Length: 179
Image 1: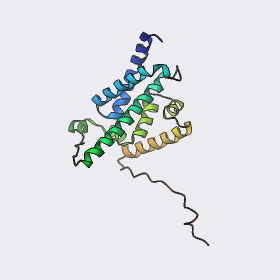
Image 2: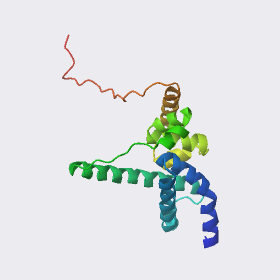
Image 3: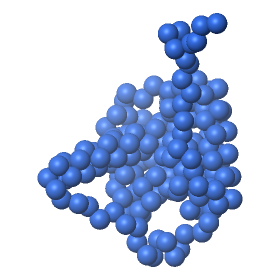
Image 4: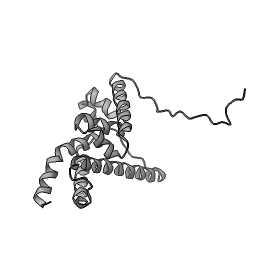
């Protein structure tokens, strides 16, 4: 693909990528940095793309993975700081709190995974199959996760506080009472 075609294909996707990155990062400057890093990675990996027709999901996957990598780095950094006895002030700005609407607050309280699913399907219009390809999971898994994300958003919008997720464990044969 000529450089001009590559440039126009990437430019066409920038508004969607920025919108998605802003939802992930919750900070316009961090979102711009995220998109820039993702576009750079896309240009460097352009020849390794598997599907010529799936540019948009491929770019979303890059942004998402860049974000997750950044989150992991931030957690490691915070862990190092805490071991050194240095605390970080991570309070949200007053301006952000004033400007946020209740629906947006509920969306922001969702987990990154739930928020990403809702944005990809509801805002960006990706198909379930495209999202399944991004996450590298079966389409049924995307559908069930999306259903849980929508339910969580409904509950948060209604003012409910999120409960900690519980996992049910199968009882082992040694703990079953014998009759």
